[in-house]
Length: 229
Length: 229
Image (tube, rainbow over all chains, first blue to last red; front, side):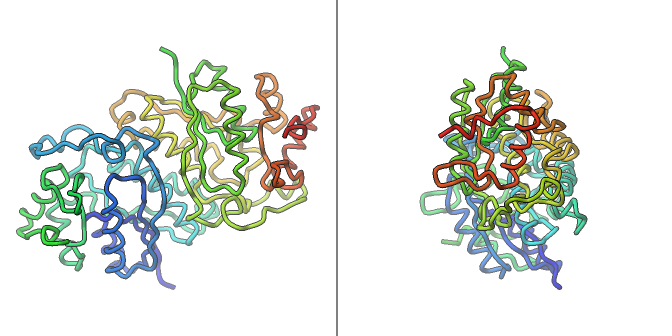
């Protein structure tokens, strides 16, 4: 019997790479993308393209509207900052933080994993570039893993142990990009920008664009997303 | 400044009582009901009535569709069991278990609490009557509380400590009903049935109806829900 896993796929570079790592490790991956009211539907379109290209076992785009929670530039009408020096990006908790988002996403992924009979959940969180997000830290992920094994029928009945895999947790953006290239990830399909043009092209000026550009520069590669449609 | 809390209100007897306990303890309560694709919309209507009657600070009915997760009689097309002996209800994990539901609900409540600046979350879970639900156990709630303080900006920045209050955790149904009466909860507005008639009347035969009837009998009271519309 082949191993199965659930992977969160946002349409971004990191989660596409985490998905590829899961597949390389031998998992048949059921991909999960959340339609959470993000300002830019292009993320979901890119997630579909990435999953198709990667040959996942299944791909769900699940409705999980978080706009009613409020309080974030990603779901409410708050403008993400532009042109910040890279030093400033690493400081404090960004306005793009969505309260409890990764907790909610992991909980929903856990529900799906339990239904599918999977015990392994992959996600592309990273603790280096986004040290400001509390729910991207190793201690958060460890606490969630512990919770998962108490929260579920499968965990309680001892059918298996849930594991949260965050293979990019301690990598720099350049290291992630090198891994992605080595694994054949379609980087041109990935989308990182917080504030794309109406046609879906990256702005090149938000925190996420700046970190991505720095990563490609350090990896000595050019970003194929700038040639994409 | 008055204390504020978030309370999960399902439309059922237990969560209505937990809400009343929070209010009695001096909290201004922001109520949260999930529209998660439950088979019976009457629950949401009852939640609205309970919250109006209780004079909550606010009431949100949040879209949180869990049908895509599957695997439960409450959201999929699985018939809840009827006329089971009470001994059988306490055994095993019921088909009405929704994978990871309380984890997802608590995570979403945590997001709202953080946005509102609340650190206290009330819910009506009970470990006695529904010992089969893994996510109604004290160790689950303790693990979630620990997670909440790692998962959030507010938790990490030390503005406060999140607490999950489950005041009914160790009470019998009869004890809950006595508390509800003492606090003036509008029990006639509460809905417990897994399989109501099209007009919204309880079936009287599902696990939830049977436990409720036993509770009222033990408390020496008659159930006003059987006179409600």
